[in-house]
Image (cartoon, rainbow, N blue to C red):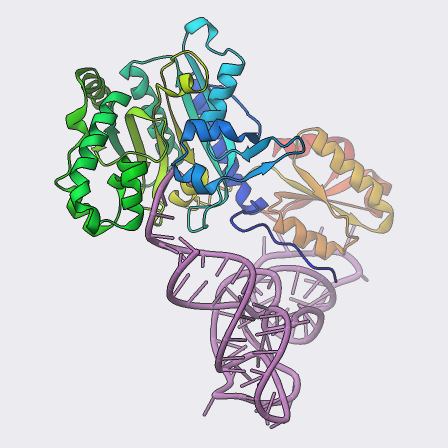
Length: 419
RNA sequence: GUGGGGGUAGCUCAGUCGGUUAGAGCUCCAGGUUGUGGCCCUGGUGGCCGCGGGUUCGAUUCCCGUCCCUCACCCCA
C-alpha cells in the first residue's frame, strides 16, 4: 500500500461530528454582526509580506518568527495571513470604504496561519472572527466594540468570561513611558532573562507581560503606563470605563496588558476564560489610530477585536446533546430487488419537498437498513417492496411508537407531515 | 528553539519481569426474526505493537536513533 498522509503539524480536520458546533458559532457571529451593523468582508488567504512587516512590527513575534512566507513565481514575497486587521485595512484603503469620511463597520470570519509550536488552544492554522470600526476616534466606539466582543462571548456560552482593560496611550505617551521603563529596568538588567534583556533594546513594553516570577517582582516598582497618559488619553480611557459601567459590563484593569502587535494605541483589552489551558486569551483587541496612516491612508482612527474560535469551542460546554428536537426524518427501505428505483424516486421526492430523507445504496438486508435508519435517528421509515409496488402503497412506520401502517404513495407526503 | 508525557485493532485502553496463536470494551458485519430498528444472545472482520538499527537462539517488550502526537515554556486567538 502507498504511504498515507497526515494533516501537517498544527493543522486539524474538522469532522462531521464537530462541524455543527462550528456552524453554530458562525451563525451566531453572522447574526450578531448584522444586528450590530457590521458588514462582512472576506480578504485573500495571502498578502504581500510587507503589509505585515510594516503594520504588525518587525520586532513582534509574529513577524520575526511565525510567518509562513515564500516567494511566488514573480519573486514577490508572499505571506499567509498571520492576523486579520492589516489585510482588512489594506482592503479598506484599496476600495475607499471610508465613504467620504463616515464610519465603516466591518467583520470577518477567517483562517490564519502562524508557525508556532502547537499546544492546547494553539494551532498553526486557526480561525478567528472579529470586527473593525473605522473612522471614529471617540470612546463610544471603543465601548461598542468591547460590548460586541463581550456579548458574543456570552451568547456563545463561554464560561466565566473575564474582561481585562488597559490604555497604552498615544504614541508620544508610549515613547515617554518607554524611556522611563528602560531607565528603570537598566540597573536590573542582570536579573532579567535573556529575551527580556534583548527586548530592553527592541521592545521594552513587552517585558511587562512576562510570567517570570523574578521579573514580576522587579516590575512591581516599575513606572506605570497610566501615569504617562496625557489628559486626552486619560479622559478617553475614563469615558470608556464609564461607558462599560453604564452597560453593566464588568472589567478588571490590568496595566501590564500591552499586547504583542505594534499598531495598538490607547485602549487595549483582552477577554480570558479559566476554562482553557495555558492559552487563556479568547479575544483581544484595541484601538489602532496610527495604522491606516502607516499603510498609506490618511490618518484615520479605528478600533477592533479578534476572537479565537478554537479557543471559544474549548471554553464552552460540549453541548447539551439532548437537544434532539424531534424533527421529521425519513429512511426509505428497499425490500426486494425490483423496488430499488421506486425507493430512489420516493426519497428524492421527499427531499424535494423539504423532508430530510435517505436510502440505502449498499444493497443491504432489510434488517441492516432498519439499523441504519435507527443510527441516523430517523423518525420514520418507509418500506417499499414488491407487494407495495403492486398495491400502490408503502409501509410507513413511526420508529418512536413502533406503529406501522399502509399508506398510498400519493398520500405519503401528507401522511408524514400531518403526524 | 527548550523541557515533561505518550505512540499496541476504526475508537478508548490493558498487557508482555524478552518466549509459541497479542487482549478487553465500544464500533463495524452476520446470525438469532424466509421483508422490520433500538435492548439482549451468539459468532465474525479487523493489528508490520510508529519507523530504522542494535543486543539476543528469540524483541511488541531491553538499548540507541528517528518520526509523529500531546502538554508546558515562549508568545498569542
